[in-house]
Image 1: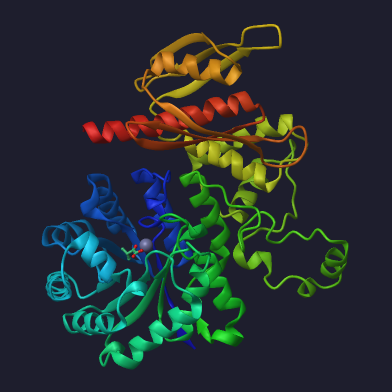
Image 2: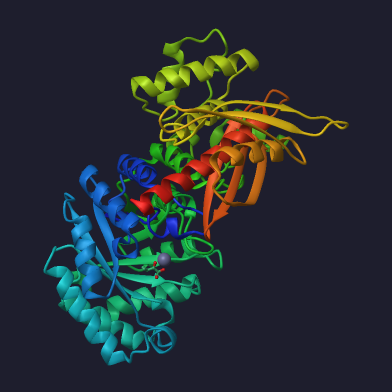
Length: 507
Ligand code: KIV
Ligand code: ZN
């Protein structure tokens, strides 16, 4: 069976999704999880786009050893040099050069004709090749490019040294049959197509990114570019978990394999959702909360008799742990550690200790601590690791005949203790105002969502917020059995991200 290369662009195209800003430590954490997942190539960022992206690619290139690390660059000599500077310490560095080739983009955006685009593409691929023998070229907006010109530029860039040529459906315009034909056309019309890996990169504007990618693979593409949970620019990219599981579940149809350790799919999905602040929709294939839940009586009956009746994938295969053990207040450290490991967490001693203390506090409030509770609890603990200000204490008073009042105490970056109080229109407003009086960074709340992790009155509440400052959106999440505390934690999380980003910018 042939192998399909999985090229993950969660940290580049995925991070381009509006509101998905990741800091450098979060990018490294996700990169390490992608390595554990077994992705062949990690597109770690676009180094010329910002100093933050440059630093992130450099760090990931140094720290990740098993996956190739790819740096994206537009077709500009200085940007290619910057991409190389960022990625050169990787064990297997790749430079990915892109340049638009559709008449629409060439006329309205690049203001260049076909000859100019052709010679620039060739020159820039050669420049990238002077640094590394792993060079990818993407004719951007390929699905709306004149096929003849596309064939010519694919041929020329392979001659110039591109080892992978990626065919992007940049605006998610293609239909599977048509996109498959485009890929087949490349093999039929480009004489040196077999000298490079033909790759695809599909966007989901019409909800067809996965279908287009799979059809491309059927027509001979051997690299698929995708993201965890399908996040990405606009409607997102092809979803990694859907591509991988379609190839695995229907290998009788595709006769293709990937190197992905599918048991790492669910932990990867949770991590990306948590760090980007994008919840996974409940009915999302493979990783959604309902993906393996059976509601209908007939289906439940079938599942009890034989899972294959209504389940085409064993949830364990994608890393969704079977909840055999429910933890409670009598559970010890060993059982807690075991459960964490089954859920895919490997915490160091210090983090484990903190998580265990939080678990004991939760178990005192809740009779049964479920896997989702543990995930929420670990996520909350991890959020506090790189805080500038820490929420030490909050107290609120509210009711239908009183003015909501909040008192907060924060610990500052050098251990200073700050306390203040404020009135608000409601308890959350009062808490946010009290925090603002201490931290004093202007921002605007643009989104506030509360959800409950499990059913039941004692459930953990999770709060997701977004705030905007100087045109940049910062996401914050917080969880607690008390939703006012969860709201305060979410706000502190967003503010800490904002402060860290501002600190990096002024450094
Ligand atoms: O969608 C696109 O065309 C891209 C390229 C940079 C590959 O993201
Ligand atoms: Zn893209």
